[in-house]
Image (cartoon, rainbow, N blue to C red; front, side, top):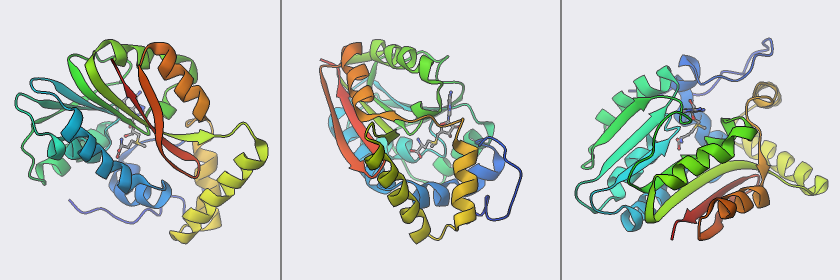
Length: 243
Ligand SMILES: C[S@@+](CC[C@H](N)C(=O)[O-])C[C@H]1O[C@@H](n2cnc3c(N)ncnc32)[C@H](O)[C@@H]1O
């Protein structure tokens, strides 16, 4: 399947909240690479972590899988038998394209696709769970419940990988990080109009939290080992291991 360059916000348009619809799904690999610093590195890390953390006869979950980049990374990294990767997304457009995308790549570990809200699915026998830039789209008050459900469905020794856009409690740092992120997007070919229209569209849909909020909540839930393992500007990835 071929993917186009992201030009969704190239022309002036009326402000509508951002949606993971057909238009976004058709340009998603280009959009995420040009918008999220460190994205490709995280996908590479997911493959490495899968080789260490996915256990025999267990499940790996990719929650908010979009086109399945993290699912494929887990599938490629897995070294064990009796493993299934379960990829979940509530966008019909994403799931449809994800199915074609996954078929196009050789992968030994089976990947099951489910179109559902991650708040509704049960997590079972999970040795690895990936939430790669998905939790930020769940209403803030409901995030704890989602993470608790994940924790309950994880095996001892299992790993949760969480990546999020973050904010900073220090206003000066926060403004600087936002500006540096806009600079990153300019360098990747986005115009001022594209940057500001996308920012407005995401404003009510993607609500970032601070790094300390994320770490504290994961610890409060019961994860024994929690750390940020990668930060690039206002994007951070965390690992949380259940004892
Ligand atoms: C930024 S993308 C995730 C990128 C993807 N994890 C990757 O690594 O390429 C966010 C995805 O989460 C999905 N999503 C948002 N809210 C969701 C929910 N409540 N349940 C399931 N999927 C959700 C969106 O449809 C979208 O595909």
